[in-house]
Length: 213
Image (cartoon, rainbow, N blue to C red; front, side):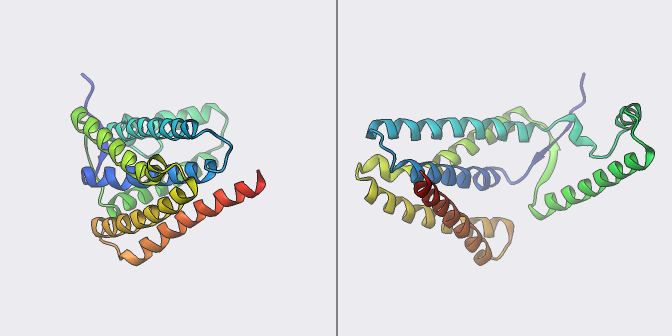
């Protein structure tokens, strides 16, 4: 029987919220801002946005499951003897192999530091927990996406819908930032500013694409 291996797990639904919600919000915000001025029928626009929302949620669900599942390789982040032999068979000199091993050691230390900073714990893999996490991550992705695309679904005047969407997006980013600050024990203002800048960057990127095309 295969021994259980380590898998990454943190604070339950809170981690799924921190991962899923901003991804859904940003993706649909970008998609709606870019496509709202295209010469599309209203129903076609809706179909595309809902398709992006569904495909994104499935991808997030799969990614969350895989992240919770982990793999046997995660148990050792250092250069194994088998990997060292493979490198030697490729005629890589000892100095280069030693450098690779040293970089892997540094990455391992950095990874452990990141896990501690983000309050992530490691545990053995549990399929029910992984499935539950995947469903929560997909739900929060949908929640963030609906916040961006919802105004368009309720108002076919896309100019007015866009203004409402921008307002909801930045309001959502503000609330999300305060929740993240509380969960991760950080100061809220830097997080709010960072996510506002990300939202503004997406809006500017969409505006530039409009000018180009």
